[in-house]
Amino acid sequence: MHTLPPDTHTHTALCKHARGGIADYVRAAQQNGLAGITFADHCPAPDGYDPQHRMVIEQFDGYRRGVLDAREQAAPFPVGFGIEADYYEGGTDFLRNWLPRRQFDLVIGSVHYIGDWGFDNPANRTQWKTVDITAAWRRYFELVGRLADTGLYQVVGHLDLPKKFGFRPADPDLREMAAPALDRIAAAGMAVELNTSGLHKEAREMYPSPLLLAMLRERDIPICFGSDAHAPEEVGRAFGEAIRAAREAGYTRYASFPPCSPPGTLLPLPA
Ligand code: ZN
Ligand code: FE
Ligand code: FE
Ligand code: ZN
Image (cartoon, rainbow, N blue to C red; front, side):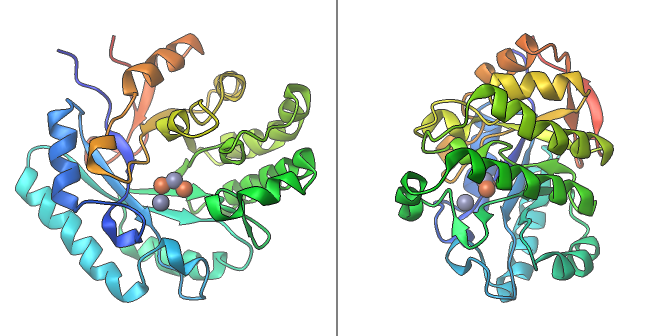
């Protein structure tokens, strides 16, 4: 049996919209034949940003201790201590000071807001029917470009998240608006995750789409694999399909992170 790549994007009940404790996710990763698991729960934000989807900062030490205890108990199975930190206007000052002191194994950078619109929140779905879809996506990719420019993150989370509910721009527009953001991601030396959660949303497709994955490949941007699990049974979900998609785009290797290997180590994709 081939070991599947580590799942580098999983949540826990701490974020208020996921189910299961740290040990449950680790057990699922072991049972599903993954090479490791990294927790990337939603980063606390002391400025009141999006409080309903994240731990409060006072809970952070408990999160850290929980992950490190699980690592000790699961050894030698690799358990990574990561975070999914949002990029949003006004949030960077805090992150620039706070993130580097936390010794994360992995920092995923995500954009969940365009201005004050939490565009991937099911509660705000109808707003997609009132906006210029192409213009919204354009603003989104501009934010992703700025995310890359900060140098704070190692991996871009769910690269084309605005498609979650199925609202998409035309391919030529997408290609043209994504290109500068991808150039900035490449210049920052970042990786992009193949996030399988989109398969189970209205988008019915992983993040990123085959079109964007091909554009990543053209720029030699490394990839890793994340389920974005919000329940233990979602750990490593559809990784076989994600590996096939990576191969079809021309990838032969994926990026691996501590504690599996030094940051960004390229390992062969399993057959
Ligand atoms: Zn979440
Ligand atoms: Fe996210
Ligand atoms: Fe996530
Ligand atoms: Zn996510």
